[in-house]
Image 1: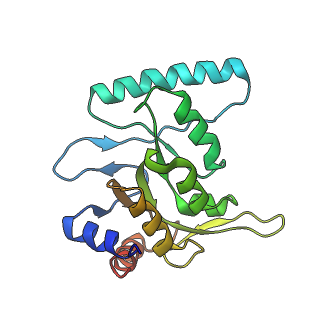
Image 2: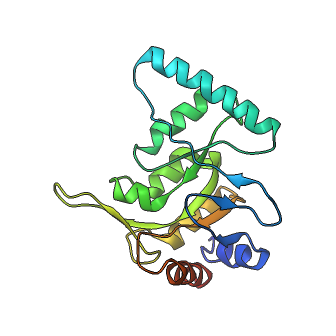
Length: 189
């Protein structure tokens, strides 16, 4: 049996868990920054071919300068992203697993891990709740939502995940307190 708390303790000891703002994530001891690019997956065949060509070029350029190109999960089922990643040259595009966004949009983080497997390059440690009826779901503080973090961490460990975990803040009144609380939550797992 795999202990789901082991990855967080190991990551906390090695310093891989970092409190970072969600828009720009600076890597320690580096001047490089994480940049977010929004890409909408399109169903029309000619647009899909153009999108694949652009992503291949972006992925090649990213590899050339030593970075990873990741697509954020959340808005669409992870199976769509998995199909896109599989259609591109190996290593071109990875997934940024965002359990909170997945939950807020009515998708399962566990199903996303199953679909994306080892193509998950980064994880946003965030939480969310699904909406009911016509209401939209929303992000919430880490540990206060529906994400089953012990199970998700166990699933990531089974897939030998070695990437970074990024703590996101929600639009609350005190981001420092929220990030500190999130880090304490993760270290306590």
